[in-house]
Image (cartoon, rainbow, N blue to C red; front, top):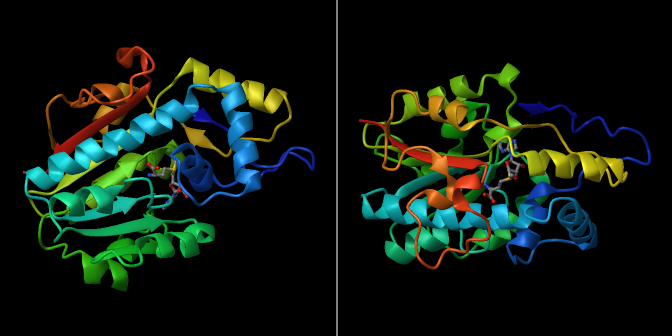
Length: 272
Ligand SMILES: C[S@@+](CC[C@H](N)C(=O)[O-])C[C@H]1O[C@@H](n2cnc3c(N)ncnc32)[C@H](O)[C@@H]1O
């Protein structure tokens, strides 16, 4: 289901588009790269959808579990598409703690987070942040900095954590995912995590816009079945596509809602 507002469509002078989503998430994740506007907007979103920051934290803790699973199953190369700001115990921190030889490339289309992101990875070995549009698959895989870090002739993991909600059906998200899968050698993995059709999220968007706080950029929410179809041709790692808190949970994970009611789905698929 698409929530049809175009980011470029501001809806009038008193109705600006949501400010930077990566920095708002960074605020909720106790990161260091957000400004007054981001914090104000984060607080407005929280007012309308009080559980949204929890969903973001739950997704971050999922990434840690998936990265740990991948490293312990022999993966040492990661391509994180739609990474946002690489802070708050993210992919390279977790992977390199387990295996210092891990190599990580973060890719995001948002040039406004480039300086911060590059500062955040400076000093980490074999780790880069690249501004690129993930829809240009060859452009990403052939990018000089990606090629330096990631040898795509060896197994690697592609992570799409809350990326595909930015790819509407008209842009063929399944085709995009398949293009990355085609480019992977056998033994590689794909992780997807995706907001579902959560009535409380939709209600939150409506309240937010009703209060004239601004307009949300276009996002596409997808059902569990739709997310499952994105793994076509891959062998799903147990437990398959499930609500995020139920993917290989660990006892210390924060649980704020009945996990089976969390409409945010994830899976990890292996290319045989
Ligand atoms: C909801 S955030 C998720 C950030 C991060 N993966 C996380 O888990 O915290 C989505 C990110 O995808 C990026 N994005 C959106 N469309 C993209 C595209 N076509 N190519 C690359 N990145 C994109 C946005 O700029 C944003 O930083």
